[in-house]
Length: 206
Image: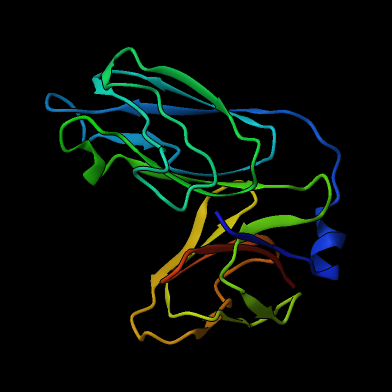
């Protein structure tokens, strides 16, 4: 898949950390005789080289992150056919934005998630080529973002992968202004979806 490199001096200043492999746990559960099918946590942010481990607490589940299902995923991952006792791990070696879901029955209606993989060892993040432009960074009250194609959706996550803001962009425009007054000071990750792909940027809120 065609990719581009976004290199910003402010991004580099915030992105140089020592590398350490970490394993992140995601629980899969729910079904006809229990709660609504789910993954918990549903949205996470990790670094290149980290491992994600999915394990079921009950029910019949799998993990489908194949590019056949999600063409924008930088890599494919798949646990196999849905079954009881899900126990699956995958090491993410490519930076980017990943989607996944459970393929059992109609579980995908509620049992889906995303993984944002950052390359913080070099300070350079390789992203889908939608030519995102943004600023100011650091930001205080707002951030302006634009791309070459119509913007559809954005998600802002904190550094722990928690979604703190999300919205559809229905105007069909290739630019938008995102108000940040509700966010605390800190570093955030913005995933921006356009008609041709997804871009991921990191910014600081002062």
